Image 1 (cartoon, each protein chain N blue to C red):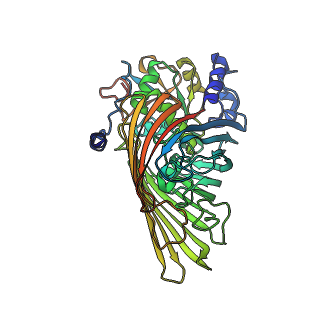
Image 2: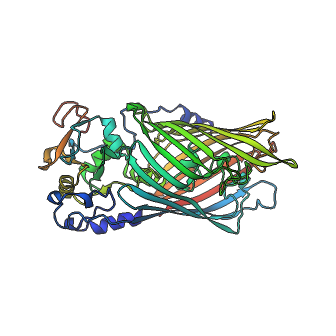
Image 3: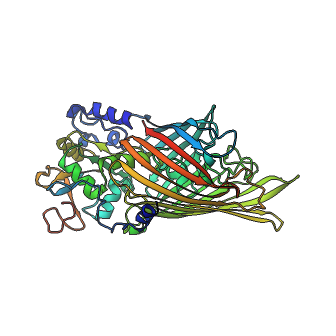
Length: 379
Length: 160
């Protein structure tokens, strides 16, 4: 962002050298009679690459009793986000992260990672036909619910330090990424501002125990659909719901079995600063094909924040993850209730300092306490 | 803690049409919405105008793309635009566009012009362009759009 601003500022240092870069591609298509005055608008050149970064680091301490729960500093995510206009209607989005091993803000602050993983999280080619139809192909953040798409690898974007437990990067509760193709757009609806999204792609590569989808495990594609609304009459409000379905194969005890996986989500997010409210409900169903075995796991969270000044925003979140005890398909998934509270201090337009207290239970065990401090920024 | 939680949960949600408390009081001018002559509308609702400036509507009609040009930092026009249309502070405006680009909903933030004179020149030249101007200084050669059926001189004009 800053690079882009600097570039624009440099370009507009004198009015006659103003650069209108990559807005629509129309500049190059303007008929000669309407060609802007010489030097006023520079022809758009493709590709036009913009780079945006996110990073964070912090400190954690916990009373959890495990070898991995020593207090200490942690390196969070380092994420580079690429945007490149390839023509007036075609664009590329990419996202690469270098993330410390494990979850930096996971259960009870247990992460004291020493390694780092580099990963390609998004690589998307998008064709924009109109406001009503945009087509894309590549690797995406799975559009299940709200948080996974709105924040994902942008810790500076989210108010809290920790992600909701069901959406933690180390938690296989949801397939967080999706390789496939999407169609999305606006549905003519006047003030309701409805939007749709449908996609088809690979399911979880390793079955429901895997949070990611590098390659499908069978020849049955997963599909996902989402409907959303941003009504004019409550500005800043987004409500929506999504459904994800796949057929997965995995080991069920000693035998290989096929399951139908369905994931439903509903959310409401009021993104005004006074207040900011986000609520999301997730349900993961597994049904063994040809048998009566059915498992339903649920998760929800409610997050509230209130900006008390231009710099300070306190927040709190309540959350619960209830795994079906009989479901063997999500080994290692987080389970339990918890809450957290914290304060976000916006030290500058692009730097946030956050302090957070977490109290969470894990697998019906005792509640554990943890404190986190984080500096998150975009560059 | 309990008091804080109750404060957050019971706080008023903010009625439609009211700006968040953090928005800077806009200066005493009326903001005209100016567009390229080929833009195929003469009148926009305030809600539709917000969609355009927020990047939620990116096409006018057919192939004609919306090209939003925002005034320079520190100008009265920008202050009024942020207060009445975006309902955001400068910080919130920057955060909004970073998040929007991150979510692949836009390629970039609107282009910021170096002066209102440049904005007028670009609006005249670029098909699909839309920007703002002090209603008492509307440049020649641009189309002035009515908002909610009202022009800037009318009583009840929303961008004042």
